[in-house]
Image 1 (cartoon, each protein chain N blue to C red):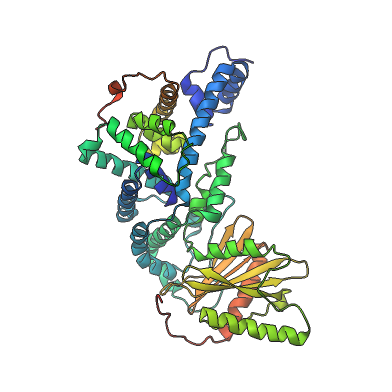
Image 2 (cartoon, rainbow over the protein chains, first blue to last red):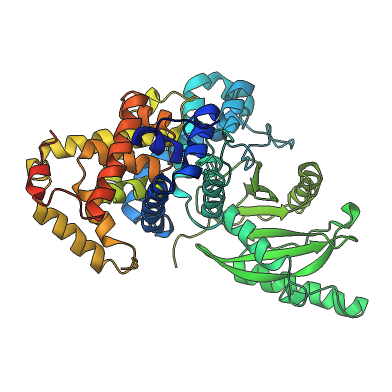
Length: 349
Length: 163
């Protein structure tokens, strides 16, 4: 069936943007197959569009000027406190709204703090919608700051998915900013943990700087002590080598990594199937505290939390439930270790 | 925020002025946060604020309310001197875009660069979807005509007040 009437520019343009209903879309498809001149015109339009995207996409990778960050951070600091009070348990409806648009790259909170640690969560409910809004604001503002890197890659991926030439007639829900929403409420460092995992977990020969899985038992013990001492010293934090053997994961070793606020550490564990998880440890920015949070970054799952001046992120390709079990194990060991109440970190230096 | 910055930059090529717009947008968003309907899309909401802030700015600064050939030149110079930009990236296209009246340029940018749907674009700009559709289409055609040298050579007649 060929449409006999030439689609006007209006229709052609809407076709290019994949805004036509399937019938009209197919009609324009058919027309363009038989009218190369119009097809050439739409290709030119598409090329113009790609050029504009390419030109301005570069902005996404630019560092955000400090003045702009300050605007957001200055505002988000106070609501963030209220957020903690809510204890990560908004009404299911709100949670659904938050995540509805994030489709595959879901960043959701764990629903509730899975641990018994006393928190003002119950009292938080009385703050009602104001508190929730505050939380949303903080979440959104945190999300605003996140940009390139992994998340940028996700934006690129979804952008490609919207290319009408690839998915001509699929009416996808708008997902181009899924990553944008997904990044909400996420400080930057868990993403660095995810990136560090993505970089080192596949390494065959040098997954870690200090390997504690080689040599005799005595050598391994010596290496473990060395690793713990070394990381503790460099991070200026008491780094423990958490024991995840009850969960089937052996410590492979660790490495030191740069982070914005100084060095951070990555501990790597591996199970019998060769699956690797990494634990990212860092000294958090002064004054920040977060609940237990869950985040998904592509095929990586990630739990992170900040406790007693310790920022932890556990990253792996494991199912969420399994990763949660491991995260809980780490959390409990950190708790029972009774980490010394260190003096609050000194800013700068 | 990177996406907000991208939009601002596509609207105002000068980095400093574009970031000023982002700053204004963020401040407005933060002070009007209580008006944000959670069911709406945050980015669309922010873009809508950015658009209004941009229009306000144009109204305030009458020097900018006329699309001035000299200004377009200056923008092109700014683009050329921007080290992050491949000069091969069609300066003529950006110039053609700059010559578009704002009521076409803005929807074209939102749909092309920000990849908003027509419905989202309509929401951000507060205009009907049909209007978005026709402005995008006319903008596209005009950019092409301009690039193909079929544009009115007396470019002066395309200058117009936008406020």
